[in-house]
Picture 1: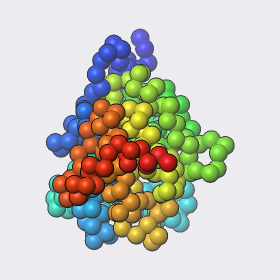
Picture 2: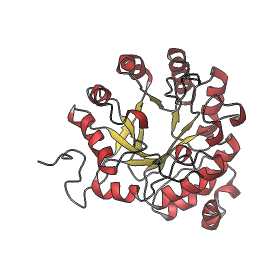
Picture 3: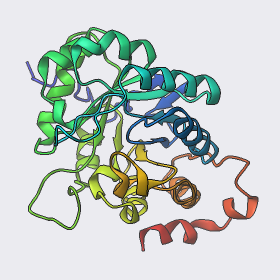
Picture 4: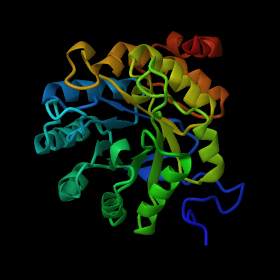
Length: 296
């Protein structure tokens, strides 16, 4: 039998499996955007971030409570207190919460708050952790490892599904190459490959791929164009003072502008990206040419 018997499409025409998250759907006709700070740094910054990204069209809130960092001296998250803040932000804004699980010992605490459990790139092949989230029924956002092949990503998802959890969302977040002008290299070709190989929804993380906020909108537009089901984007009220990943985080205004421009592009690609009424009508109706300028 095939190793990817659960993740593979049964037929070439099989529809993408829609993952339902607290009233939101990832993998349907809508282009779903997850946004928020890399790390939860405090209550006020989280609440302001959640309110801002919601007003710009994000459908889910991201925020790290437990952070894997290359340096042991870097900020590693607020832990349990951050989970409490995320729960409050969901209560205030209505946005479902996406947050990372690093250690199976924290699964009960994370699962009690998370609407989607994120498995980060560094843990893509942490098989005991994949088994742990597979035994739950909370949707899982699985990020591709920085040196992982597409097939290895699919087999990691297979581990989760083999333990009973079919609610898996794949995420292309860039891979490590010889190129140094960006933090990672966004493997844009992986999205159409995955869309052919698997029925699971596929989203893109342009923030970690770029490592630079100025490149995020162009990579987000590319994700729309090649058929991704959504984005996960880092947004911070003051990126210059962020405790993690400030260089790749969009300001509130930059995120709102990106969303405004992505709307017509998504429509042109056959996807729906709802633009909130709070964004002025003239901003919503400036046409496809405006949307395409995000690539320039």
